[in-house]
Image (cartoon, rainbow over all chains, first blue to last red; front, side):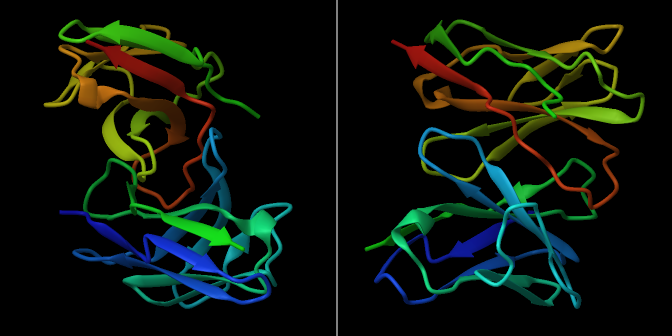
Length: 116
Length: 112
């Protein structure tokens, strides 16, 4: 149980285009999901908290107009990287908490974004 | 502010116990200690968590000092597949939606 599916696992896009990443909780409902970014050999950095039915909360320094987050249902949150640039190339990971399990968060398998 | 301190890297021989330390000297009374690990290019995987008592599951054991200022994750018989970055995280409560923040972690390399 407590599976989080993230799609796509890998994407290459051209500079200036937008890319959407999906995060789904498969066997539980998640009112809150989290998006992280990870650069090579670095730790995960929290980007934003995605709240079902309301606006996302962004960490300081994260551009909300560039990283659009939508959490339209209790099982799906999306992160759209708009007008992507090569510096946006990174590993993006989502997580969600199954309130039925008290031990923390389940993470998706991540999305490797390469902007060329 | 970093809530935990871990050594950046450790090596362990295959089949031996891996003991990963974590300092959390500013931990509050309501904060739990969580351990996750991240195998290369994958999302983090939950290992174990605890408040003040030692905990054990099928993956590992967690030893928390009596003053709760430090803890040790023990992988009893490390295998090559345990090579990963291990993160120690302190976080208040298990039943809320507060975020989970990662420090630098310890890169464990299990060697044959």
